[in-house]
Structure formats: structure tokens, C-alpha cells
Length: 227
Image (cartoon, rainbow, N blue to C red; front, side, top):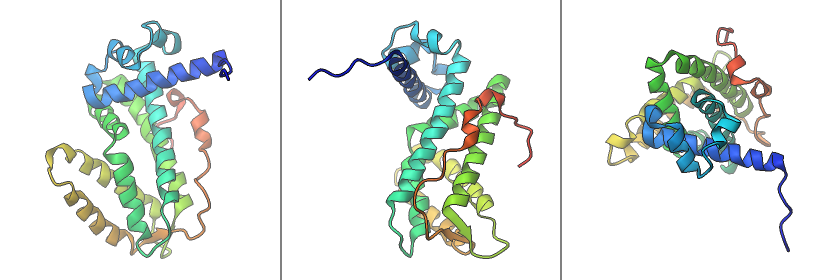
């Protein structure tokens, strides 16, 4: 039986996804400077006019790929958390699951390349400040959904922000270390400290809601707003 023909909207969505996937792949393997539109087109296996039709410039393509990356990481972390059964070491399992599923993968490598390149590119830096704001707000939503404090003065959001920075910093060393078990040793040590302040909620039924601020284009995010 023949498959129904895709609509123009479906074909456009698939084309955009291929371009965004290829952009992240190029960033991870070629770096920001090496991720030319020509290389992205070649990796996506699309026509040379495709990026221009969907994204008028490399900056617009990078911005769209960055938003796509944040959404994908959020969905992947939700999948990881919900796949883990409750256990006495549930918090450790969650943090280790996040490390294994995100911080050694393409999306994190692409993020690191953009962060490093933004130190010398003010236009890119502005985009990354907006992305940081979206990332922080997304982490805030997920933290409140998944975790609760063990004592009144504990601050799970601050602790999870520190955890994100710790894992991201550790991921910079991944290519330098032969025995990656050392990373999990130190993650477990960190989790022992976390476990004195916070724990996973007992009644988690599903992933956190889709962030409403995702409907605001990244270029319109106010990077000056208070935390």
C-alpha cells in the first residue's frame, strides 16, 4: 500500500530538521568556524538553496539549531528521569543518567563549541546570552518538577545549577582521559553532598510541562530580566 503524500508543511519541517541536525553535527566535529553553510548543506544532503529558503544567514541557522538543541536536551533528560525506577540511590541514578545521556553527546559538544566561539564574536555572544537565559528558565522548571528540598533553607535550583556547571566543566576533559570511570567517581561524590539537601519527588507522573517561553523567538528573549 502506497504511503500518503506528505504535505508541503511536512516537507518543510523535515527539511528544517535535517538542516538543524547537520548544523549540530558540524558544530560538534568541525567547531564554529569550521561549520560553514556549505559543509552543513553537504552533511544534510540537501540542495544548496535549502538553507537560504529556511534560514537567511548562518547566524539564523545557528540560532535555530541552538533552540532545537535546548529542546532536545530537555526532552532527553525527561526521558532519562522517567525511565529510572525509584530506589534508595534514585538521586545518584538521575544525575548519572543525565551525565551519560547528554554530557558526552553531540548536543553538549555543540554547546561547548558555541560557548567558546562566543568569547570572540559579540553577535554570537548575544545569542548565547539569550540561550543561557532560556536554559536557566528551563532548568528551573525541570528542577521544581523533579526535586524537593529536604530542609526549608535548601535551594534545589541553585544546587542543580551548580550540578549543570560541574558536569559541563567535566565534559571538557572527556577527550583527555582514557578511563572515564573517574568522572562517575566524582559525580557520585558530588551526589552525596546533594543528597543532604534535596531529593527526587516521590509522586512524579510525567515530564514537566512544555515551557511557555519556548514560544518566544530566541532573538526576542530579554537577557536583562531578573532571575
